[in-house]
Length: 70
Image 1 (cartoon, rainbow, N blue to C red):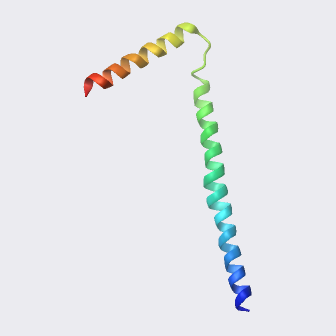
Image 2: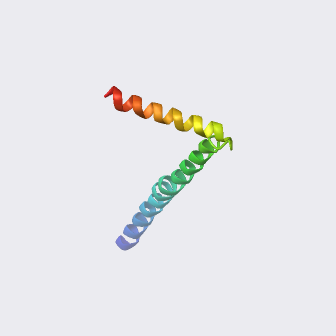
């Protein structure tokens, strides 16, 4: 009777950990975060060389501002 109680309790704790912590946080959150990052970065790929040059220049200006402002 005691062994069955311990096994059932361990199984329930393991099932909860697997479903909500490992699958929920470890797998699903990582997959959704990766999808969201790809979705957001998709808008940065516009295929226009002038736009890429503008983004590069804006990044250089922002970096210089950060370095000089310190």
